[in-house]
Amino acid sequence: MAQSETSSAGPLAVTPLNAEHIALGARMVPFAGYEMPVQYADGILAEHNWTRTHAGLFDVSHMGQAILQGRNHAATAKALEALVPADILNLAPGRQRYTQLLADDGGIIDDLMVYRPVDPAEDGRLYLVVNAATKAQDFAHMVRHLPSSIRLDEEVERALIALQGPEAAAVMARHCPQALALDFLGWGVFAIDDFPMIIARSGYTGEDGFEISLPAEVAPDTWARFLGEPEVKPIGLGARDRLRLEAGLCLYGPAIDLSTSP
Picture 1 (tube, rainbow, N blue to C red):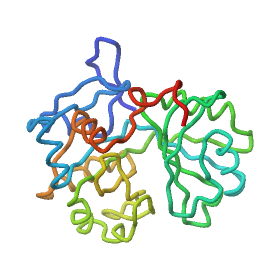
Picture 2 (cartoon, helix red, strand yellow; picture 1 turned 30 degrees about the horizontal axis):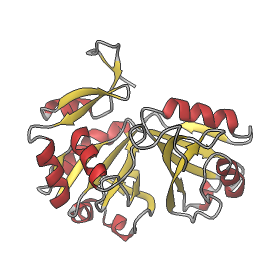
Picture 3 (cartoon, helix red, strand yellow; picture 1 turned 60 degrees about the horizontal axis):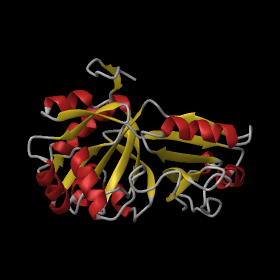
Picture 4 (cartoon, rainbow, N blue to C red; picture 1 turned 90 degrees about the horizontal axis):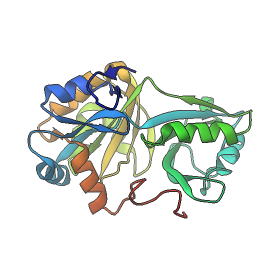
């Protein structure tokens, strides 16, 4: 991944949308080893209120994406269940589940989302999304504790954006109407501009919305396409934190950590 040259603490990683944030006049700050937008010209409070009333677009490409692969779903699910306090075996195809990655004493190493594919050809595969600040230790912990028959592949060439707010569905209907059939925590692979993307009906703002995992090379065009809609504005880290706090959603570090029991 490309590196930023402007950090007193050493080079920061940048997301595939870094140039877009700078062009929009974002205030960029170090966050979890990345240069990220904390706010845009309208300010944090305005961005917060816009997301609550219209639709906000978030760059969350710094999050860690990975795939677990085993011989079948039962094998992969049981291996992951040894590390998380959740029923992964009975996770239905096309559904995702929120859970926590645990240390040996039960403390929380991180919280994460687990996706099970619909396609029978992907049987034995689980998609994971973990937090940016802990992704290196998360994946290392998994590799140490998973059986050798389960492979973990990091998806470093993918971006992740979130479209959130009460008008998110109306916006998505213009670009991928098939995704509107998803209910909360449902997901699938759909095409936008002929590019297959993982689209989930989920987010971390307390609003309806979608999280979109897509190839890094098409992320700027997709970002611009959504921002071209009148209901959509870019939203930075500051408003994202206020939104999740207002919704009562945990943030790893301030709310949960190794001292916390699930």
